[in-house]
Image (cartoon, rainbow, N blue to C red; front, top):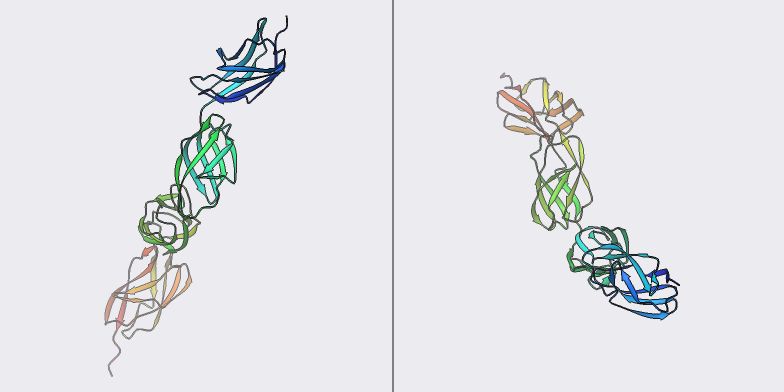
Amino acid sequence: MTLPIITGVNPTIGSIAGGSVITIWGHHFKNIKHVYFGVTQAISFTINSHNQITAICPPIMEPAVVDLTIANKHGASNAIKFTYIDKPIINNIIVNDSLVTINGSNFTSTFKVLFGEQDALYFKVTSDTLIEAIAPSFTLPSNIDIIITNLAGDSLPFPFTFSVPPLITSINPSRGSSLGGDLITIYGQGFTNVINVSFGGTDIAPLIISDTQLTVTSPPGLSTVYVYVNTATEQSNSVTFTYVASPTISSISPNSGPTAGHNYVTITGTELTWATSVNFGAQSSTQISIISDSLLTVSVPPGSAGVVNVSVVTPGGTSNTLPYTYVDPPII
């Protein structure tokens, strides 16, 4: 009594829809009566020689690993594992320059990734749910279908738009209040499909002005953070945005001067580094010298005789006020 022996099977993977052609190698194949995939017989099989059979695998309800066996009148052979798989399914696409990350399922036996009618320049099946591919070149923007093919067949086409990636060229202003609330304008390109702007990890929805300009209200924050613009699939380069705390002033010296102005006073306080102007009542002076974060000097603008409130303005806000007295020149 001689039982058949299987030494090899190729491929060891087939579609749950059935119909895959499987080659079986081994010994004692002369009088084979049956080829089984699990408990189901092959759709058909052909004995090519004493040591080779080709068989058509039957369909199955869902992905599974089954025992492939053959049998003659004396009994069944040893078993070889055969894996039934389903067609690939693409769930989403993430693009970073030319690197395309494809998320989905049933990727294990993938042997082709198509971008429209072009093959991927390179792809790697990282897991059954993840493929990394290098896309071929396109004229941007391009609307294409992405299709993945494994041993079970083709995925459904996944429509995707390859657009000009977002790029930031400038941000204005580049400093703002630590309390947030400043209107920030960002310039660049590829902004049409931007969904949010990230300030150090805090995402804010912008107002899209054009493909090259958007505005956004800054969230609260501290110190200097990186700012990005994001589409659903791509992230721009980064620029920096500096949060500035509200200034305070504690003294003005001298605290009086001529109505003609143009004299200098020294102001002490905190958070004075980014001072942009000093208000003397309704008048403003930008002739400022920053000595340190707690000290500045400023040229006093002309004013009318009397007491006015003095405050320092920075991107962080406007300080408290201290009095300054304008004095008429003496009459001779």
